[in-house]
Image (cartoon, rainbow, N blue to C red; front, top):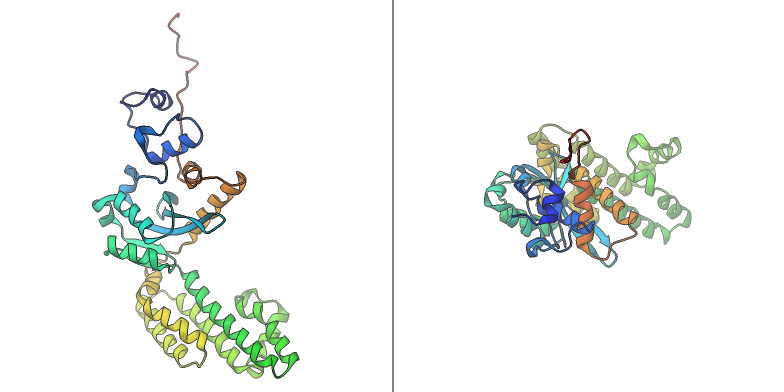
Length: 319
């Protein structure tokens, strides 16, 4: 039977107890005097709604200085956070799958994530039937980082020959990284002469832009074929940064192409993470991860509390 304070809060003795996510939030708001039945407040257990998870996103959130992280699981269908726990290791995500249960794991079809090896290993171990979809923007960030590394190499090489030429290359950072439609007229003018000014940097810029254009495709087979051609180009480009990123993309090629089929990114998880981060800033920080998780569960999971109220039109006993 539910404790008296819970019965008063949720209205009836026969009502089903709220999920542990509710209890966590209530505990943080000091509406519960003690942890319910010895429950651990370090993480959020699954509730009946999680049995219908099909498409989920996994991402980490830094909640405190000193590399203190939370792992958050988001439902792409309901646009809500459904689970959170301190840590960002494979064991952390493994806990989620264990709490979800074997039947719940079998229902998961897609998992979007960044290229974290810890999350990859946990997903492949517990939900091998699910398709991993790497976030497109994290993959493009690898290619953009390779372009920027090539620019730095050219700057170091030209600095030994000509200070003016090195200064021009240094000022190309943002024009190279921007999307073409966001360039200012001055930046477009500078890139128009890049082929004549620096052939290596121009080749790196073409690799970056062609990669983004390939991922805009709608046919997975066509995209995969073009990516294979792009990988061949990158491996023979004589640009060390692109040779290295090409190996990474080749290793995870199928999971990158899966984005084209499912059109899922981690943008939803990133957006909810931003909201969760604002909660910590609003409170000027929390001392424990459980307090952060409780507030996240209260504000980012769609929980609705309806405390019992006495209706004005109900007659009293004296009447």
